[in-house]
Length: 264
Image (cartoon, rainbow, N blue to C red; front, side):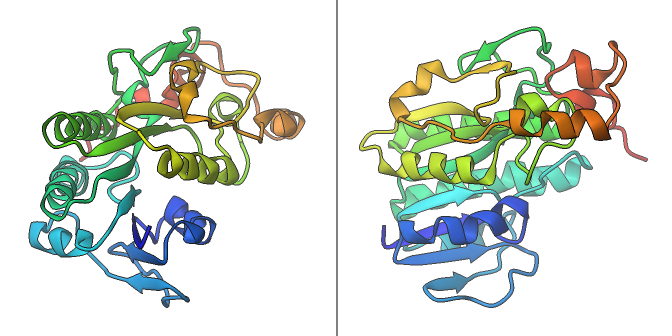
């Protein structure tokens, strides 16, 4: 690619992927409302509020692909989620349509299906069961991706990211952990395949305990190399197992299933 846009570049995933994905394009355009530091070699810094439609159109202009980490990254007040994750995703896809940017990696979330039980194994075709306003916004984003694929041919991989951190730090993460390296190789494959279409992929490493099944997207050719199993002893030693009826044990979305959307 000539130019790859990474939104949410000041956040956890944007910061980690900034160097890991720089080989994918001649120029990496970085955007956020937070501090992204100085532009490095072959980087462009373009601050942007995703709720500003005109600014997003300028942001997407000249880009061949987008890795969309931008938006509210956890539960929060509806007006904040609406601006960044609802208006923002509409603005992004409209800009893609206007400027002919036809491939997007959308950072969706496991919280789009958080009310499925941990006793269930689900694939990428299940009906969404979001566990909060944040989860609802990710379902909305997946549906926006579907609409713009059907109408305008824009290809998207909606990645329902599990827990992407340096290492798992609780027992639920032994199921949901995704290493930074495995996320990077997944994104590489998404941009490498000649035909992507519009699909959903669960973002988790090669953990022996799992409740997500990616077999229907095996054609992508992504094989995670890391595993939460390597940290199991450390997690057991440093954190107590929650009670059997705790949300972290019952539901795939963990504590997100508790009612924290009615914020005072």
